[in-house]
Amino acid sequence: MLSRIFKGIVSGVADSYRAVRQISRPGVARDVGAVREAGLLALRAGRLEEAAALLGQAASLDARDADLHKKLGDAFRLSWRHDEAIRCYREAVRLDPEHLDARNNLGVVLGALGSREEAIGCFTNSGS
Image 1: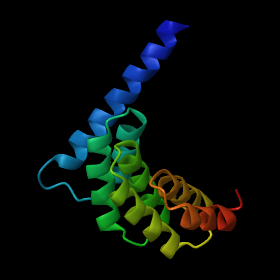
Image 2: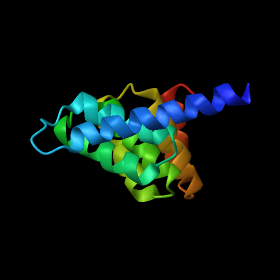
Image 3: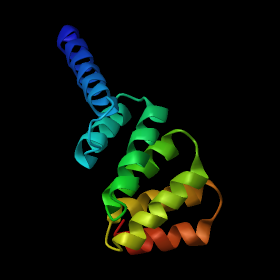
């Protein structure tokens, strides 16, 4: 069982590496889907700085994707970069006021920083 888990981790890392190599080659068009997928793979693998860079690049290619801003916020939150996480979650909610995960995560970060009333507002509006 442990061997299968390890193989899965190695496979995911290899997929992430291939995706990053593909999008970083000179002359390769910056496909938002490829950059996003590479960022998500890095996020799942715990490579938070790489994830933030890739997801930030994807967000600059498609600034209207609320879920992309939410995922970028996740990378920042997990890196303890709370101000940047808040900015990303706020943008996700601005783009999609019904984005429950973004509202919830915004509330979590605000609560952790002591902004209790604002955090409660996020939870009240997120369906949590």
